[in-house]
Amino acid sequence: MSATAMNASVDVNAQSSTTIDLRSDTVTLPTPEMWKAMASAELGDDVYGEDPTVNRLEARAAEVFGRAAAIFVPTGTMGNQTAIRLHTTHGQEVVCESRAHILDWEMAMVSAFSGCQVRPVAAERGVLTWKHIKTALSPKLYYRAQTGLISLENTHNMAGGTVTPLDLMEEIWAGAKDAGIPVHLDGARVFNAAVALGIPVAELTRGFDSVMFCLSKGLSAPVGSMLVGSREFIDRARSVRKMLGGGMRQAGVLAAAGLVALEEMPRRLGEDHANARLLAEQIADLKQVELDLAAVQTNIVIFGLRGQGDAAALVARLKQRGVGASAVGPHAVRFVTHRNVDRAMCEQAARVTVEEIARP
Image (tube, rainbow, N blue to C red; front, top):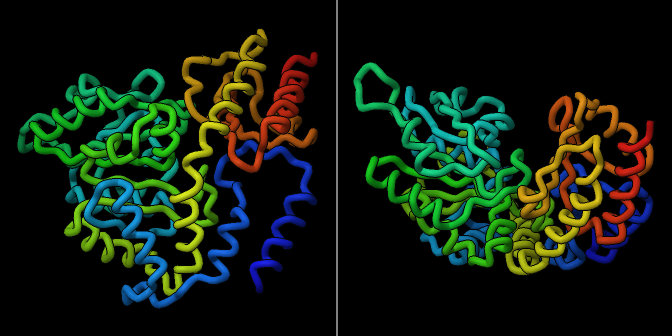
């Protein structure tokens, strides 16, 4: 299919849908530039290391994050679980926040694949500090499972897209180094965190032993995530990726879109943050809603329904009126803003949401 035909196909699909889809930023469609790059991508067999477009993406990702190497993986879950497997040995513990993606949304792979158990720690707005973490570390006793890894999430999805600031992470990096424990970042939306803080991602992530970030969320690529780290770490990651079925062949078709995502899309994420703020402010004053405006820091809005309101029922009513949302608990709803939902659409979604929540 030609680039023109693919663009036409995407345009038709976009125009045929009236839904304001705020379920997730994973629903983003490729930009016209991504379609063109995909259609003209130079290809090879990536399992042999011969796909030049994948190689360019991996080199550029490593450069952006100030690392020696990177590897392209199909999903963020594969990136996280590859890192966990490499940092730990069977029978250890992984410390993370109690609503972390690696705990709730990665199919128990910490135990199923790496043979470790999770040591969850609850933190206000999902922001872990060294004070939280050090109390969860295992004592150096032969009859206790030892802490093998600390995993952070920035931004924190299920805490509402909250951002962990650099100074708190510096404390964690220093404490973990003294304790001899590696630290991994689930940075699925780390570019959102960097934009919110006004800090380059290389600076924001410099103390982590490994970082995973997604190309397919706010950056709008159709598929893919990256894992960055040392050369030795990434060399080992290639074997683990193959174990998980992630050895793709002519993957440059996907990597081409990833290159556009990496180079062009971070600069517009502030628009998504502003739109999320608009949504939050429109519904925060409703008596039926519990929403911490201070926690709306990036492109995610999570609000509770007072009086044990039915989140699934509200989501169903919103869908009937052309607004996509997610129930993230019996009484909690999530909106996620992205480039395929502009400000006017967010204003409309806010009006519909207010009407549906306020109706008797």
